[in-house]
Image 1: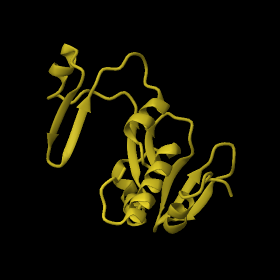
Image 2: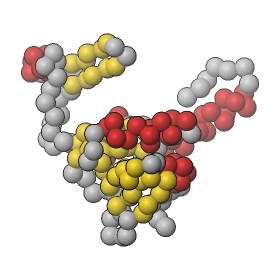
Image 3: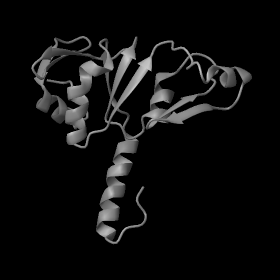
Length: 159
């Protein structure tokens, strides 16, 4: 939240936007292609001030550099460099999607998820056209602009 600014109105407005992003869980779209296939979606969303996250919700191996520390049972093993942070922390039991979203994707409007989850699937048709394979409904073909516009709705995949 913003607390220090010269214009109190701007502070209130920014804090309202911040709180609204915190209240609602992000929209989820399951993906099967590599992250690079969704670069146009991420670029368009960033331009429209829509935050997007990426989640690999599959069994993943621990980064080689962090494995020895993680195996010791430390609270967190973190590597920082090249403009990135990688963190490994222990988990008790299988991952719970809701908990992962709350902890790591607060403020995101959309999270692209690679893995077996119960969510609509997004696939590229080329030329900035996208197909959303909805659950228990016919697929929905959209262009990039309308895909980003739909993300601002509470139920973006309804007709």
